[in-house]
Image (cartoon, rainbow, N blue to C red):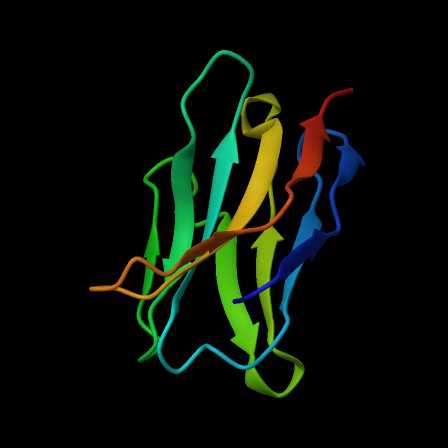
Length: 117
């Protein structure tokens, strides 16, 4: 079992920045793909960014060049640095840990990000 705890959400003006954190209850980064997803009201949950065990990163087209996913192995923490935020980035952001090829798939509780003036 893995517990994921997100933090760092809040209200920010358009063009501003936020950093989300996801703390895992134990070290899993060597075998789990860590991802950030988001879900806006009335929309499906979508992948924002992910980092594979080997360090490869992938981003949704809508956030490329603005968001950066990273991890700190010593702290069992994954980050999502979000710059140049837009109102359309407003959503609940969820951290996910998935071990490919297995049913092991864990979610955090979510953190609200609101981009508004």
